[in-house]
Length: 231
Image (cartoon, rainbow, N blue to C red):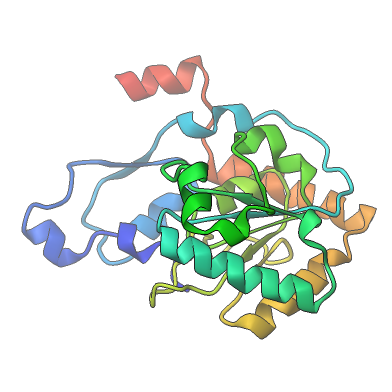
């Protein structure tokens, strides 16, 4: 479960001029990860424009809802849905408590047309920053949405890969009280049961961890940071 290994340039890529003169990441603590295979690259942090609306501090509330963020691949999305419905059914959690968020490139109507048995599931197309605090846990695989969820202090379960390659968007130094990396069905079940015990004390802990994640992995978007970026 190496952090986003596919984003880290190799010496071969550098030697063959396949790497940009400068690589920008959203936060200071990500810089060392990009240099995993070679220190001979220029990596800087830049304002986290995409996550601009996520910087507002908001209190986590009690919830029994689960958000499942799905990948860009339609077939993998189907496999994840089938996999999780089976798990939640086994541990007696109703489908009404599950909300599914398709990748932005996938049209919901087309997806349902291809898989009509999913027509009775709850799909949301709202932006994450508008709905994230409605959920107890976020489940997914490889998506940057998982890191964004952690920034809000919402626990994350990183699901097993259905593509043959494990992909983990969560840096190893982040406090693992707030997330679980799962390699199989049994680990997913254990993770769900663990985060089901979501007390007020734990929610405060998650919020504190989330604030640290925002500081270290998501640079502020303000006049000074944008000015520096432009120049």
